[in-house]
Length: 75
Image (cartoon, rainbow, N blue to C red):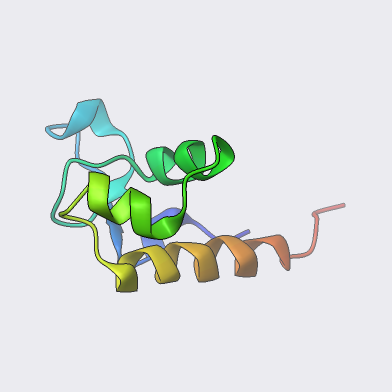
């Protein structure tokens, strides 16, 4: 199973947002992207609301999440 620690566009630091997984160089939780999309926001709106997050980061998060779904389930 893929670990988010291998995704270069995110970081996890106990000093930032209580150790929540955030977009690298920001205090924006990765979870916020998925929550906003689930609530009907577009990627462009999300990036407008969280200007520190780049499109490259968002695309890398989507790619990483998609790739992690391809991992085989342990028996």
